[in-house]
Length: 222
Image (cartoon, rainbow, N blue to C red; front, side, top):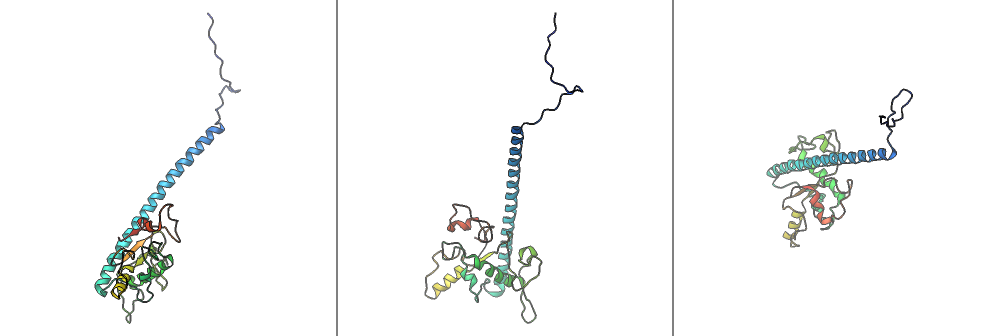
């Protein structure tokens, strides 16, 4: 009886079957999978980093809010710029209402707030109490050094917004003008917020989010 025979795979001179090489299609598939996985990892890491920065902004807002309550106990009012009128000018609901808040005023109000809360330039002739100790990472100098141009920045590197527009509107009403109709500020006391990295100097607001909805993306005290 004859034995069945099958063709043997081709062998090299040493009798070893050479390894099978990847085809071009297989290599492309592997590269695509790697790119997809890398994208997912970067996306997750980016979201985690943003959430951490946002939470830190909320914590810093609470820290400054507490400091301003202590400031009011000592001074009878919350910090309000009666000279440059910047805190009355910056309106969290927009300038005019319904438009994005004026970003050019952010640095001015943040600088004013820093001087009022930090005890900046405290001397025997001009005693000022420090209501909060800012970390170097919270200031534009980044080194802890304080100058006349130092102001507070959020974890995204942008100025905090601070507004007393509601009070300004009430003052206008007391002088016979139009009362606050709900379009000037959100709190009767003060508005304090971080734009969450959006706006001038940061990233663009998502498509479909109107100016009247910008505040929904902020870390804020209302």
